[in-house]
Amino acid sequence: MALRDFFGRLRGGAPQPTPETPNPDPPAPVAEIPPPEPEALPAEIPQPEAEAPAKTGWFARLKAGLSRSTAKLTDSVVSLLHKRRLDDEALEELEETLITADLGVAASRRIVEGFRRTRFGKEVTDEEVKAALADEIAAILDPVAQPMEIIPARAPHVVLVVGVNGTGKTTTIAKLGRHYAEQGMKIGFVAGDTFRAAAVEQLQVWAGRTSARFFAPAKPGADAAGLAFDALTAARADGLDLLLVDTAGRLHNKSALMEELRKIIRVIKRVDEAAPHSVLLVLDATTGQNAVQQVKVFKEMVDVTGLAVTKLDGSAKGGVVVALAQEFGLPVHVVGVGEKAEDLRPFAARDFARGLMGLD
Ligand SMILES: Nc1nc2c(ncn2[C@@H]2O[C@H](COP(=O)(O)OP(=O)(O)OP(=O)(O)O)[C@@H](O)[C@H]2O)c(=O)[nH]1
Ligand SMILES: [Mg+2]
Figure 1 (cartoon, rainbow, N blue to C red):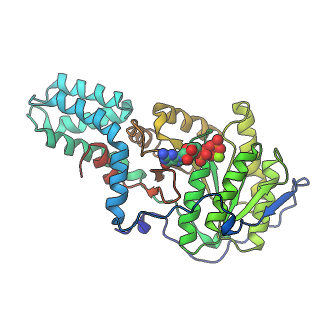
Figure 2: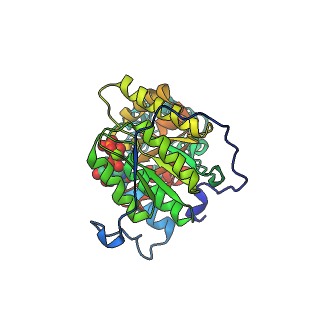
């Protein structure tokens, strides 16, 4: 299957009517900064890996990235079950091993129950164990492997990108922007992490590389909601297809972060009451079970519509994706497998499950 198919199929259709709404309180001034000229870019635009066939390239990378998770998991599973009958004790140890590998209690139990039904009392080879585990894992992941559906007719489709600091929000925006720009969409980036000048600059550099329109705060610390309001108003006037809104990962406490995110959403709705159309929570796989906690917290704050899981290229805790799927059932739209703009991939359940078990 072509990689493109994994990403949202694009739907056309008439733009949705927007009810007349009053302007919010005077929005913070917004500076619209044109993308820098290509020659002004501080670094080279990363190029996709040359001739590597799409799937092999990304799968190899994912597998290599997951190898730390894989080694931990398969070594212990294989040594645990090697030439041993699958009795109650073996299954109990298997469950503990899966929990230790970050798959979570519920998913581990479910996988072991699957094993019990089909293989209880049998002696299984190492390869059988890996393949069977991959099948059980894929069954958990399959329902959540869903593309993020972007509907350009929303003119623009607004994606609010949230997550704690350092998880990869800004990089994921850059990657998504690149992907959808390649599909011919007109893209805008909003630097909603207004407190840090470096965060604004980082997104601006990516905007230049992607030819995305860039909306920056007038000054550091300017009101993020006001910026989002102005950016969306301008994006509508200019017929952008997709607006990706970056947000701050850390405010001084949870209630401040909640208030800021809610305010952004409230104010965006004054321009388009259906927006934000997607709320993408970005999680760093290397944080393992912490990612589970983050989903809980953000789900309380905002209506998260899907997940992006980053840093799977260097994580020993890839198993957490299984725990997330089992516990929340939220769509996992994309995974990050590196720092470059092309290092974003659709989440493919079977590939991921087999990669986790070290299988091709
Ligand atoms: N290896 C790897 N690094 C990544 C990936 N995604 C992001 N990073 C790196 O992680 C670091 C943080 O990424 P950012 O995109 O700045 O994260 P953020 O969530 O915007 O961070 P704040 O703005 O500080 O909240 C950067 O050094 C990125 O290059 C990934 O998939 N793999
Ligand atoms: Mg950022």
